[in-house]
Length: 483
Image (cartoon, rainbow, N blue to C red; front, side):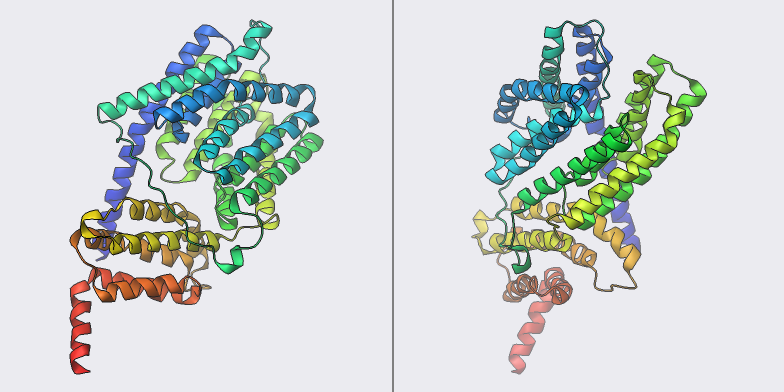
């Protein structure tokens, strides 16, 4: 049994690495194409860096997954780009006003999610240029006219969108990337009583992000006036995609460890090799590629290689990397601490509450699939809800490794038990009528969501009935006959 589980794990890892490698290759081709076109139009370091950042952001966000998404991005991008350029100029000429504009922009980008998918896509478009400003060091232009300085971000954004959409479509056409599927609509279960009070999740996340960025700007401007961006960037990273307090703490640890290792490596390279622009650019692109490839394995890899790229990027700003080693690590640690404190103290979201909501969605999707007529059954919604559960698994599994002796019934066990139901549940959905004992076990698991101490036994019972339906049905029949 152990050997089978180990073999299955190896197969999954190999498959994920292969899929991630293909996607990283396509993304890097888009990055290089956008970078080359940008340098031909505006041969300055600033637009070139912006081209890389926006290409990576578009490729990962999948805003162009359909024609409507591409049109929305193309129409909204110029306005959003000009707004972000204005905020970036304020950050350097009127720092406190620029910080307020930046915080407001990020707050709105997250808050808009409450108004549905279209508003959520608009929020993602708003966030992209602001994040690009944060990750791109200010490099004064030397050969661009004032009109071109304003037009460059819009041109670069449209180029990035065009190259990402074109190369991803071509990759899907030749089979290098999987075909995009229409995302199933997941109807969320009603929240548990303890999470029903207060603002909805999108509003909480927006408030937490605004608080973290505000504190990070204040601390950065007052104590690190020349390098405030590292504090703000770290606070943003650990709070982005907030899935609860544990998720933020977990991401903070990985960010600090990965960034620390990346900073040491990058500064070692720059100290021993020196400043060679072409070699530095090659190292930066190689680091970005490795980060894209290994990110699905663990966030720490992304933090490691992105930090290497960002640290190398500072060389274009004329800064001495060797002198920044310990101050940079200190700034990263401060930013992570700010992010964690805001996630835990400002409208905190319990990670177990998020997990129970996602488990509830998965059980509801399984119930709906089994209740439908055999000819109308579909597995897409159930698979999508299981994927959402798996997204929140890493922090819980890390917590289980640390607290196994203190907490035997750990939420990570809920995740593993539910995910173990995937294959037998899909076979039952596609195979025919669900036996009564399966429906009973499913109902008991859904009921146990309001009693966390009973959730693991209920999920284990559900898994047992799904794995051995015939045996369970025979036992039930034997019991009936004896009665």
